[in-house]
Length: 376
Image (cartoon, rainbow, N blue to C red; front, top):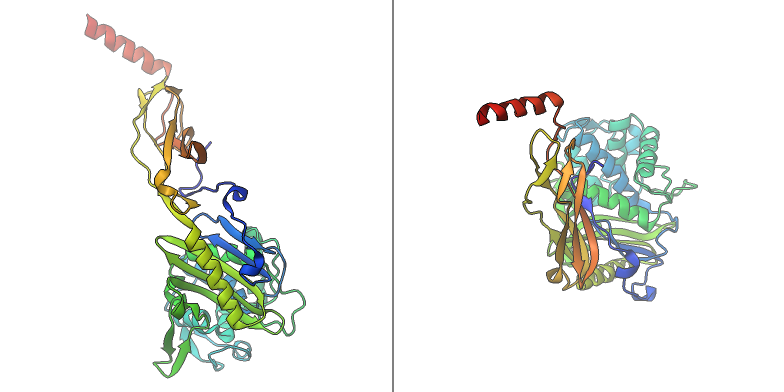
C-alpha cells in the first residue's frame, strides 16, 4: 500500500485522552478545542450543533483566497476594483468606494484584522466573478473538508436576510485548521493588533482582543450579530503546540473571550505535542531483486499526549527479516510503534524508499555465467 501523505496524523482514541471537564467551566453553549497539527479534539461540548457563525464565516472566504493565491489564480499585488455591490455592504467595513482599487494583500488584511465585509465580497468577486458563484465554491470546499453541519449563503456572515447560513463549532475548527496549517502566512495578518491602510489614513484595530491580551494568541476570527450572538475561532501557540478554540453563541463579547481563554488555558495546561522525528534505518534483505537490499524509511510526525508524557515514550520496530521483490517506493513494509507505559499509543508505517524490480531470467543467467567465468 502506498504512503499517500508525507505527514501522518496520529490520533490516540479520543475517549482515552479527553479528561472530563464540566461544560459550565467554559461557559459556552457550543465549543470545541482542537490541536492543529494532528486535528485531535481535546474537548467538545455541543460541537455539532448548526448555528449562525456571523463573521467567523470569513475563515472559509480567506481559505479560498489563500488557495487562489497559492495556485497562482490570484497574486498578492493584483489590484482589485471594488464593485458597487461590494461597497454597499453594511456592518464592519473599511468603507470601500465603488471603483476604489486595493491590492489583494491589503484587502486580506482588512478582512482578517477589521472583519471588513466589503473587502470580503470584493475578494470573492475577484476570484469567482460574483459573490453567488463564490458561495458555491465555499459550500463545495466545506463538503470536501467533511464539514457536515455547514451551509453558507454569503461570504461575510451578515445574517439579517439569510435563512440557513449555519455551521458548527467542529466545522469551524476544521476549516480553521486547514487555513492555518496549509496557509500559515494568514497568521501574519491575524496576529496584527493595529495597522493602517490607504497610506496611513485609515486605522485598523483587530476585532480579536485576545491578540493583545492572551499570551501566544495568533488568530483567528471573531464574529457577532444579533442572531449569532458572539462567536470566535481563537488560535494560540505555546511551546510548539498550536491550539484552536471555537466558541459559538456566547451572550456577550467579554464572556466569549473569557470562554476562549479558559478553553485554551485548559489545553496548554494539560497537553503537549511530542515531535516524532524519523531516524535512519538499516536496509532490509531483498529476495529475488536486482539489488540485494531495500532502503526503507518512515516520516516525521506529531503526537498529542497528556503533559509530561512525551519523555516516557519508547518505540518498537516491527519489520520482516526479508522481503520479496518487486517493491515500489512507498509500499508499506513494516511499522514503528510508539509506546507509553507499555501500551501502543501510535503507529507509523515504514515504507520502501526506492523502487526495486524483480530480477529477470536473463539477469540471473548473466550472473551465473559471470560467476562461472570467475571461478574458472
